[in-house]
Image: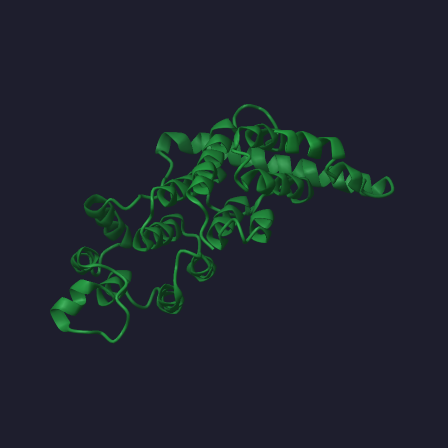
Length: 276
């Protein structure tokens, strides 16, 4: 189910605030608590942040919490964060947050289905995240109807064998104008079809860049060269933070068991949240 516009606005703010404050020398849990106070209480995001904070204590990451909150976060959002949190992953956590920030901003402005698809698919291509699980996660986004889900899952089976530009061209209005009905639902307009035809047998990134230039579709964020050293530092910092959390849990278990009461929400905290 698609969310209300205010939810996407607050999601974009949340991802941006978290990304910008990671260098403040404060633990991620404390950052979440602070940012939660700034989020509109009329949205569902504060409840989601509470759940993410609890999950962070157990696992040291967000992805599992986002996957379990499938009624609020899309499978694609959970997939991007999961890839950023992988020990051997190549996607930086800050870049992942910016990717989700831009996607939420685009949806808040009234995103087109074509724009969301191209943005998500470019994310997979540009960051080499893996098409199999990535396209499966994309298909779970509620913005897609049954025709789109069928197209995405077909692409999952054929990617690498058939040019993405060809697949867009064949499912476009421009293809019907030139060669008649293909027998499958039209998913892209005339302009997308023309741009796809002009970019056949080329790097898919050229296709995405052309679509962004001519149709205003959002481009996927990517770090500048001078930012790479800093991004690697933050990646290492997050890994150390997760290791510290795991060591702490192991030490508690060795001393006689993990105190689960530290993860409970205190009644007085619930009353404070309700009074806000």
